[in-house]
Length: 283
Ligand code: SF4
Image 1 (cartoon, helix red, strand yellow):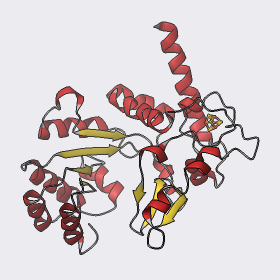
Image 2 (image 1 turned 180 degrees about the vertical axis):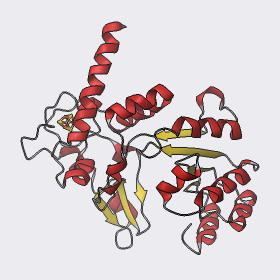
Image 3 (image 1 turned 30 degrees about the vertical axis):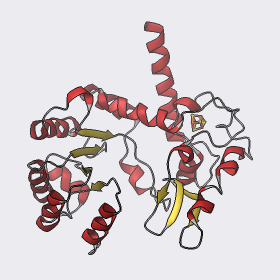
């Protein structure tokens, strides 16, 4: 929505039959855009709401008066028939408010039936795609995640969901570098026209401005499937891989090396494994 021609792009995608899910911080929504979306609705709109007090919210956005503006836009959208989903990153700054954000959401949008939440948490924070690790200064430690879970067990569920969706196939021998099958399930085309198989990495990507889609689509699978560790990384035969957020793309963002362990992930994985073992032991 930072683009002046957003509505033009949106209408074009609608005409082409795309199922559109709009992800926004809610700040750039104007009355003109909202009215347009009400008339020509997307499948859903997801708005990140990282605080439920002006002080906390604006300490994160660093934009004065952004809180009343976003809350106003959320309330406006809540009166329409558009499916609205609110979500929060769990951060050091808002850890005391995440459960309240959810409560506020349920008050506004109603409690979702059969766990089809209109509210989602994102407990994990990763570096930016250019390897800038500044966002990681705000991520929660394992202890803080556990504390949060006391406010709402769904936070833990979201954390674990992240593990399972990324590592569905762990039957391969440890020497293979890639264990995720993201590339078999999805692809992305970024705003620069690159076809990618992983949101965290440009490694296996092609420029669709110069390469036909079909050729690009079939170029990588065998290489991804067969790539192996080149080092004796601790991750290679680590028994905690099934409960760890480690993957080559994330390791590269965190350490500059696809094969390196990430101490923060190790800590989370060790504690997660301990907790699972305890659960099994105590039934
Ligand atoms: S990051 Fe740590 S816990 Fe995760 S796979 Fe590597 S060594 Fe194991």
